[in-house]
Image (cartoon, rainbow, N blue to C red; front, top):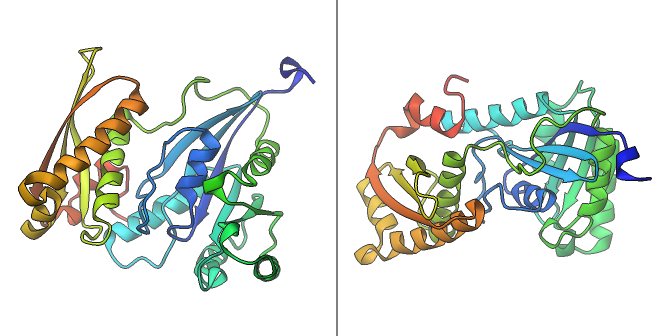
Length: 303
């Protein structure tokens, strides 16, 4: 069938799962570009990142949510709230599971309980299947099938794009017919200021995933596109203690320079224009209780 004869489709798919299940890696594969940050640390995604994929005559809008876990602090509660809000907006839901973990079903039980009474199609996506034996994979699929009435089960390795095309086809079948909600060349609804901040935050975690806890955030203070030859981006990295500031700066500024170099390269690739990036590191001990910081991250403060 010719593309012009295929009915136009457009809809939302929510990707949910426990922290570090590989949701951001999967959404980047589905979209075909980097729209969500990836880090070895859990709980990297803080906000609802929306990626947009065009496939033939369909526009699939993916909601990459923060990992769902037992929240203890205000930031945790805001992140989990954002994840469940993503489910409300979706036409279908995909639960992503890292099968290489010790207890994948236990890690996901809170999510399955939260979906009781849900009327939307729910697919199970077993990820990182290249890391475990096939017989273990079959047992896990059976255990999950017993625990929840999934419409379909997929087995993928998102990092290698193994099984992802079949998953994409399923998503297309789940979204309704309708006009596109976004321009066909748009790949994310994240404002460029926030996307730039997310890129830098990823580089911080990749550089400092052992030394620095999650008590840091990045805000884009200046995003100046007036010079088409080179954009000016100024960002502030907020930490809670002076000792953390020293860690981010590194010896004679070496660490912050490395972070800036890596972030600048990604921004240039993302925005397709050279970037002059300036980074500042400031101590703000109470930023985790500051409503303004939550608004900057796209999170609700009072949840």
